[in-house]
Image (cartoon, rainbow, N blue to C red; front, side):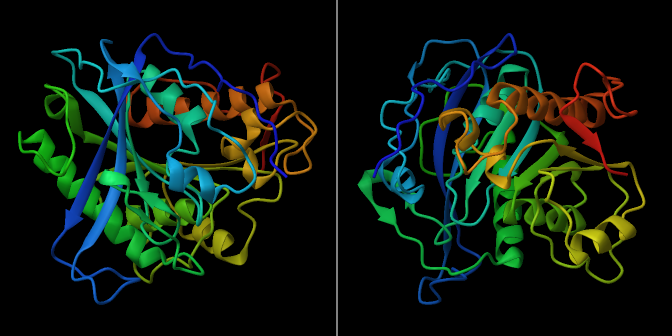
Length: 335
């Protein structure tokens, strides 16, 4: 049975119109971790950015991605983004990477990503090929082959994307896809962040250990691996999750080994699916989600995600992380 969903995602809160382009990236230096006979790793990514308009209405999820989320019919869901929109000239933008949970397509967090782009961020969403169905150019779809996430391979995917972004910022075309003029020049790779959900949260944390270019990271209900020996992390990290999230022994070990700025927050009345587009799309009261109203969950998550990157990538002060605030009662400070 197909579940009826809302037809429009929540409007982003910033002043910029989000633009989006899609790229196929190939890393010729390593074989695919799930298909050893393939001597290269290929990825699909979406780049979301503050635009000057002039594009065409962006499509939500393509065929393979839509099928991977099961019984939701998302064919009529509208976005607030233009595909291939023009890039404003003259301003460098902070860049944030995003890694999804195992089995979840990269753009099933559009509610969060559109909002960041509308507030001036370039957001790069990554599909980890063979961990979910991925739509490649020409209608080719790679189905899921993995039965679990493989965090080391995911971290290498993140490093591949960073290398390709460096090429783009230097004026080279890093993959297959049409890019609007000026996109590479808009990337400020001295202000790099990362966030992830589920296995993507563990990916974000581990990628920060492995690559010190990533200055700040957010873990949304993360699936952690124990911290690597000798890799105590000092860069800012926000744990933001459901009431049951970020509570495993590995998460406790991560917290103990982290010696920099850190906060551990929960959004009351949520489940792990509340940090995907299930939250705004499913009808209120869905058993997959918690009892807190979808609008309050989306607002609280967007606000704290953006405030964290505003603080640590852009130097904008905020009181949101000083302690509980009456105007945001959905946020619980755990420690």
